[in-house]
Length: 150
Image 1 (tube, rainbow, N blue to C red):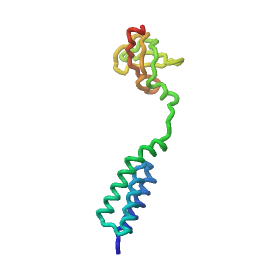
Image 2: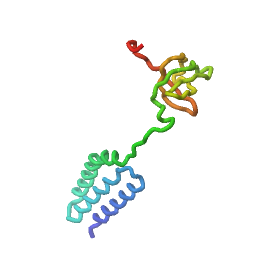
Image 3: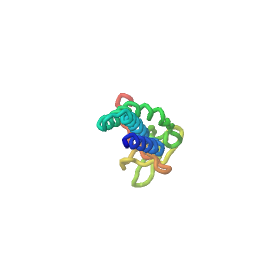
Image 4: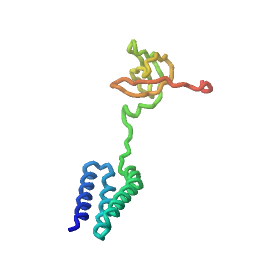
């Protein structure tokens, strides 16, 4: 009895189950490769041909179609609330001094407690960029303003 088609069928089902549990769009292509190898074995193909088909079909589909499907199935995340503030610029309205644990920044219409990401003192009126948020404090870095804008 030729066990190759049964082994390829088992592998195909295994890869499909793995894909269903992870949804990483990786195992799916190996399942299709196993299907190609199973068809080759049913048609009397040698083991080397089955293995070649399995790896070739899997690799080609993985490289060609995974990026397309990944882009299609990955949800577009919209930054909301505090996440939307990271990367924005604001103005220091109260000197930022990490040692004294004080500082205020105006970001749009909101005022935030602020700390310096680098630990340097940032003077009032300085333009800053928000690097991250921890609790109710924003961590900022001074932004260099080109001389022709001043």
